[in-house]
Each structure stands twice: as structure tokens, then as C-alpha cells.
Image 1 (tube, rainbow, N blue to C red):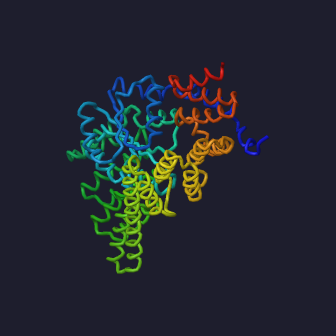
Image 2 (image 1 turned 30 degrees about the vertical axis):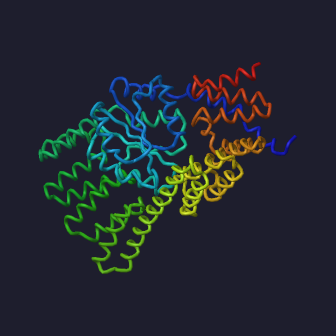
Length: 468
């Protein structure tokens, strides 16, 4: 037996069975919510990503629900997103924006609050990111994303995530909206009565306590406002809204000590907000603590420098992609500059650059160089299933089928979900097994592909071949 062959018997039956059972075990309520959103509420989806695999997964999710693609708009750039949202909401009453946290080196997260202020409750936002650090997720949540998708994600999980985000608005939240309107009209007595009724339903509701604090602050009853905001913060420890309300309250009352206290607490929870670090530095400067202030100013500068570095690397990559078809050699030089610019600061959000570079090398037949590029990225981001899968594809191109299978097995062992991201993944793995004349595995992987896309003709053709 070939030594690489040992890696290839990786619980194939278990993976296939779990894939078959997943749809059966999943609650039908999620499917119903998403279908109702499209067919009855005339809601639409706006997907902003350059990740082809995610686009295929989203489309596969719509197919699984029996929906066509009319409700889905896709864009590969983050410019004019607000304008496009306005156009979509002109023809549809509800919009779900599913958007990458970063595209081409530019962070989209800072725009979320503006979108929310502009479009109100008609817009929900799901932020897509491959980055799993708590700091990154906290920063996204702070900027009012309704939900977060950590890539990779399966068809079933994306349906569930969408359902949770667009779930029908219940009477409680309808009443919250009515109360907010009353507060805007300065009808404080009626607003307080309605909040008290809601608190009977949900004692210590964070949003209710925040609204009571807002009323007290507008009436210049600052001690009461402080009490309500503090209680809201206790009830929702990772929610930064009550903390921000306290910061604003102390700024209005010139209480620098407490304002700084809560800014520091917010910075501890979500440390990637450079504007808050500048605010902290400014307060330390007012207190005469210049060294501490300098520390926060430098941290703010570092965050912005990282963002600028991301943009530079992405610019090199964009140039390389535009040159790829008519000047591959020069294109590769710019792609190399992009990866070099990122250096050791490369994260999961930057893997698209590594993947594009690998695809370009493979297109030119340089599968060995593609493997080296993927392996360099693996040293910085170990246990990344997508990189192992791409290495396997490169080995398959070089007809190193046993090594390809080993890499596929590593990818599956790290993240079994990779088999559910797209029908092309099990299909491609099945093709490699076909080259090795291992037909039982071909059969299983082709059937996995057809579970994800019952109309996947190429998988049907392969099943026909092996059956003969």
C-alpha cells in the first residue's frame, strides 16, 4: 500500500451520513421564516462579496428553499452600497444586507451605523468574516451589525442565520418602536407608562432601561439617567450601547473621571475602535497624564496603519488581477508584493489574496509554486481547512493524487463543514478518487454534491460512469 494511502480513509461514511441527516434534523421553522420573508413580505437580499464560494453557498441555500435568484442581488465591490440599498428599498419593503467586513483592503464595518440611521428597521445587516478573534467580532457587533457569519458556512447554517436575523418582529419590538417615537416627540409620560408595561413582561430588559435613561437625561434628571443606564449595562454585559450612553451622559455633565472609566471599559471589550482610543487619549491629556495619553494615541495610529497597509496590499492585488490575463508574469509580481506587504500580519480575511495568487499560478501550470504559496500562508494561519483543500487541488493538477487525498482529509478533519460549503468541493474530491479507480468513494462524494445541489449534472454524469 502506498504510504500516502493511509490518510485517505477518513470516516467517509460518517461524513456522508451526517450530511444526509442534517436537512432531516433541521427545524423546518427556519425554512418557513426565510420563505415567508421572500414570498409574503417581499424581502430581498443584497450580497456584497468577492468570495465565489460564498456566493455559490448563498444560491444553494435559495435553491434548497425552492426560491429562485430574483430576490438576490450580488456586488463584488463595497462602493455605492448605500445607493444600491436605497434603490432596492424603493421596490422592496425589507432588505437583508449580507456584506464582507472587509473588501479590497477597505473596512465596511464603519458604514453599518450610517446604513442603520439612514434606512432604519427596513434594513438588517449580516456581516461576513473569516476572522474569529473576539476583538474583531466585538468591533463588528459594536457597529450595529444584526448578526455575524464566520466563514466557512454551510447551506443549512446560512439559512438558520438568515432566519434568526429576519425573524418576524413581535409585539414587544413593535412597542419599542412606538415608544421611541413618543420620546422623539417629548411625550415622556406616555412613553414611561408603556415602558413600565413592557418591564412587567420582561423585567430588567436592557432596551427598556436604556429608554428610561434616555427620558431622564432629556429631562435633565441626570442621577436617574445614570441609574437606568448602569442597570442596563449590568443586564447586558457585552452590549456597548448602555456604556456609550453613560459616556455621553458624563460628557454632558463634565464628569471626566467617570467618562474615562467607561471609555476604558468599552475599549477593553472592543479594542479595535481607533476613534475611541483618541477620545481616551484626549481625556488623559486633559488630566495632565501625557504619557498615558500618548500610549492611546499610538494605539490609534497603529490600528489606522494596519488599515492603510491592508489597502496597499489590496491595491497591489487588484493590479495583479487586472494584469493576470494578458501579462501573467507582471501580474504575479504585483501579487507577490501584495503578500509581502501583508507579511506576518496576514489573517483569515486576507486568504482571498493567497487563493487568487494560487489560482493564477495553477492557471499557468505552476502547481508546485501554488503549493508553496499556500504552505507559506499555512505557517501563519495553521489549521486552515481551505488552504489544505487548495493544496489538495494543486497536487491533483500535478497528478499527485495520493498527496491530494491526504490534504483533502486534513481539510475535512479540521472542518467537516467544508464538505457542505459548495457542491463543487465534494465533486472535486470525488474526481480525484475517480483517477485512483476508487469508485466507492467516488459514489459517496458525488452523492454528497447532489445533496447540496440535486440538479448538479456533472455529479450525475460521474455516477453514471462508475455505475457502468
